[in-house]
Image 1 (cartoon, rainbow, N blue to C red):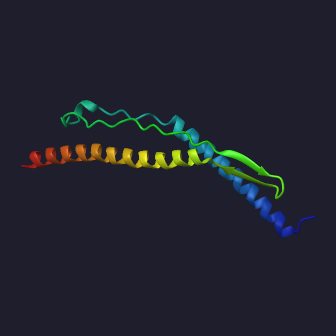
Image 2: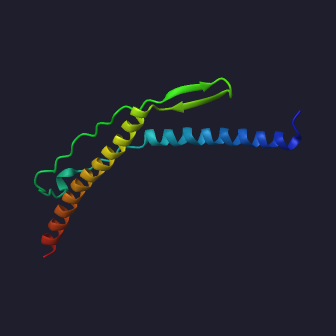
Image 3: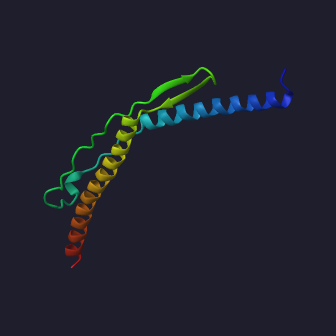
Length: 122
């Protein structure tokens, strides 16, 4: 048998979850029934930034975990093999390289917009 304070806490938690679920349903209904906003793109200024710098597609190597159960200690582990650990290290290098390439594209467009704004103000 639970003490009365634990029962009250459990009831309050259930009531909170029910109220939260109701609020989520209401927010989803409001979001789904609101009218879409139309934007007239013919009003926007088009900027010619030249050819976009090329960015290679990010391809990652597989790093599948293996399940291991130690019957002596009755403990379960998730582990990876040494080649998969090396794949994970290579993936980190590839991700950093990919972000460096993306920063080149961002700089390209930032410089293009800054040049456009600088010539427009004069």
